[in-house]
Amino acid sequence: MQVTRGVSKREIFAELYEEFMPKVFRYIHFKVSNQQLTEDLTSTVFEKALVNFDKYSSDRATFSTWIFSIARNTLIDYYRTNKMKIQVSLDEAIEMPSSEPSPQDEVEKKAEHECLRGCLSRLPEDDQELIQLKFAGEFNNRQIAKILGLSESNVGVRLFRAVKKLREDFHESWNG
Amino acid sequence: MNPGMDEKNKKERQFTEDVEDILAGKEGEIDETMDDDYRSNVDFTRKIIECRGEPSAAFKEGLKKRLLSKLAEEEIVETRRQSETISFWGWLKNLIPQNPARRAAAVTVTVVMIALVAAWGAGLFSPEESPLVTGPLAPTVSVEVRASTPETTYLIGEAINIRFTFKNIADVTFKFPFPPEIRIGDLGTEVVRNFDVGNNTMTLTPGESEYYDLTWDQKNDAGEQVPPGDYQIIIPNVQLGEGKGVVSLVESPILTISDNP
Figure (cartoon, helix red, strand yellow):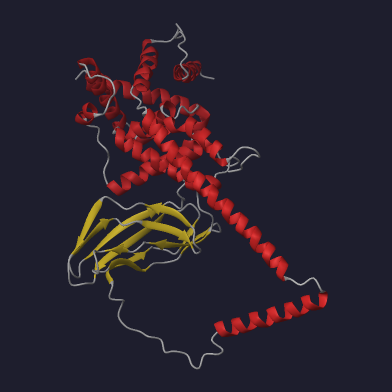
């Protein structure tokens, strides 16, 4: 990481944190669902980024590609050490802390979201990754192509199909 | 080009554009020529976006504060280290005499002293070499760990499968967190990859062995390929209660990563 004269490392890191922390949080949340666990894993990602910040070179990768590869590895390590795949639970969804009151429709919305996350976890890994990078990371197709080693046009085709697959599975699960 | 194929690609290109507009908060009209399947897909993306988790303001601020204060501490340490280095060199410069004759004498004395220290370090002044003490493993090692790999030299990017064999060599049963913290480091002091301690527990009765397989993809903690070179496997000792001993890595290969097939 190269620090420009007059701009401190802290200022650069703070700016990147503001832009990317919510995206990394959403990316992890798609996968683990649990709010507390998402916070813990997001903290781990940014602590690793901080420790390795001096080694980061913008000539080799954009910060978004770099931080998301740390996030992916953190998730892989988490699954490895816990030896299980996180299953989405409806109970957990209802217990999730919320500052909002929980009327019936709010509970139903959460259940619907959890059902969608459950369907997402049933998609092939590549499709899950694609949807997470697009909707949580908000990457464009060129960036996703670089991360996943695909061609840009292939990303567009696969994204459309993955969303379709997810939609069909969701309708089947939600409507019984 | 096949017109059917072109139409299909157009649909998928348009889909990407529509999704990116929705993500950017721009709600445009869907092209009228698109079919119901396409419209359902675009509508469904709103549901996906709706179900994204958002960090709370307290978490966002708390983590930011923690990270930036850590960075500030590092900057203070670095500044102090730099000023100490500068003052050390200033002190050393003052020690060197300005007169050429005195400078030559000082250099000679320094060279002789370095030679004496090197000779002493090589054991030239020791009366006789102590015999090598051999015997059983240190009594504190209660669970020994041996790491092994099918090869010791790997091509760059090749997955490295490491088997860890844990053996209880004491006469009591031990329980410890499993898998333990595992690190991959270069032959200096730098650790390139950390595998965190697991949430499980391993129980080993006296004489019992268990193994654990780990695959290292040759990447560092930032997800980048490590450079070619020699690497070692490290397991920090795990204490097994007060005075009961430790889980300790007693044997492990040096792994060579080569870019030369």
